[in-house]
Amino acid sequence: MKKILLAALIAVFASSGLLSASSLESLRRSSENIEVNTSGLKKKSAAAEKTGASDSGLKSRPATAQYEITPTPVNGFAELIRAILKLLFSPNGDIEIQNPSTQVPEVEGVMEDDQEEETYSEGQAYDPVDLSSLPQDPFQPPAQAQQPQQPQQPQQQGQPRVDIGGGQGDRIPDDLRRKAMEAFSANQGRIENKRYIGVVDFAQHSSRQRFWIIDLQTGAERAMRVAHGTGSDPDGDGFATRFSNVPNSKASSLGPYLTGALYTGKHGKSMRLHGLSSTNSNALSRAVVVHDSNYVREANVRQGRSFGCLAVANSEIAAVLASLRGGALIYAGLSNSEF
Image 1 (cartoon, rainbow, N blue to C red):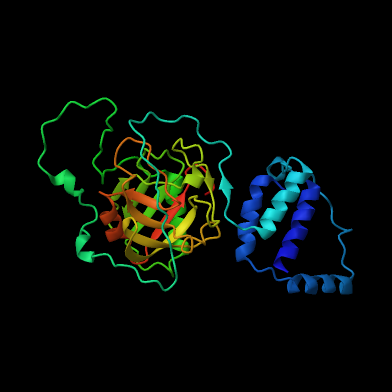
Image 2: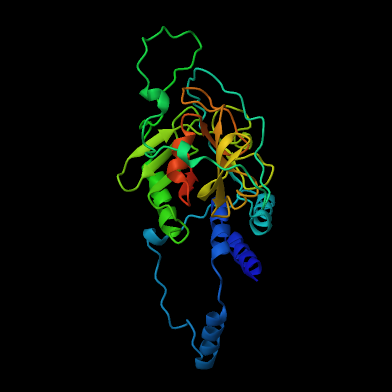
């Protein structure tokens, strides 16, 4: 019934030219969470017939500029039909950036992509993570930053410049921070670890520090690099432009995640993720996790691509697990967009 009502609404709006392509995904997401109750409409209609009420006595007033609507029709009837069918029957979280950045930053190296995909089987036993190996204070600098400083050596040509992890990095864009906190508030009943929150900005190049951990008690932030999926970056330029919730897409997924069990897997220390929206609901079955990796470095390089996982550098994984384990929220989004 819900899909029938949605199809009827789409047909009405499409015929009047008020349905835009950009509104389709928002309409679908709204329909997943709202039950339409038509009983009130039927009662109101019956009452109107009984009293003989009509709108013939109403005086029309010209619309003012603030109420005018500028329609943006979908280009082409075939595209409209395709979009409607996808909206109704394929809620797969597919999102594509229409105008991706073409200004690829200069990097000092390129990391290899992931060669081994994570797996998930319900009920399967995995080796645990030794909790004593995790830091008590996740915001302490990595171990290599605490070593005595060595005399500076001339940098060889082509050698990546290694940054100290755990720094401030780029600040979290205000709009992305707001969306992350809205997701945090909306999922309060599910979140057990309310001290820390993770935020990922997939709008930024993979060479940038675009994964932040925020201590909500102190306001402190820790920034680091993170990989995106090969399906999100098919041309390998370091920008993620496609996102999907479909199995075997090898793409990253947008939306809020709840952190799950820690385990030691193919990539070492890892943490399960549970998707909380229609755009990432298959995260657990797709084995989209947070994990240690050798193809992500805290350096000015194009990071290797994952199979959709949030892969971080060896120097950062312990801090990520120590802070975000136990049912914390991670919000993966795009700054300067609706996601």
